[in-house]
Image (cartoon, rainbow over all chains, first blue to last red; front, side, top):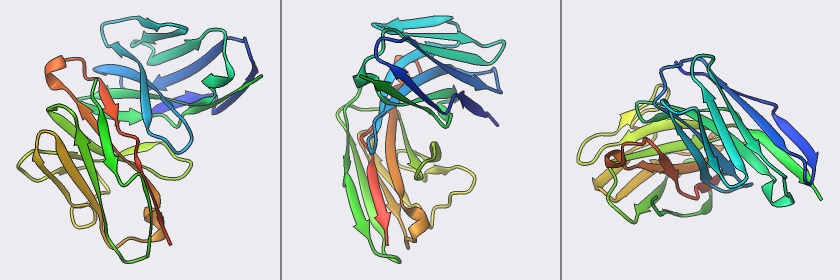
Length: 110
Length: 116
């Protein structure tokens, strides 16, 4: 069974600082890995999808890397803004079934 | 991507009652899933909604408690039966376009249920 862990559980940074969010998974036979953003009481917004054959994906200030052999993915958010405050979830896909980590709650202080 | 609408967005329910959540997608999708997010927890897959046949449930979830329908490629319902306070959660519908061959999943805004 796939187990996904996210560290740290919470992170508070001043505006402008870069964010580094970590995700690890136990079963390296993943189809892909997705990063989501969740605002309080809301659904999930897909941020980045990394296929198992890829090493990284970028979208604007966001960059996600994937190292299948070590079972790790990292989400980098450059020049953080207060609007980046949210919970970030990573999810590993095996046969269209997602296994989610518990998330990292980010607070960006103005 | 896909636009996913869920109804209701939130509800307060009495113990012992049942509530049906609807999920409508703006395009035909191959895969539809239902997830639960309990307070302060991450998401857990309840079941895969199969068109025209019985849903496929994950360990710990049963059809009598969470009956699911999927009459076509754009619509599904999840019923939470005989609710107790432990069922207070956000329930989320998720879809994937298998033809896109990326495995990317999209989520609705969720339905927040509070059971008193």
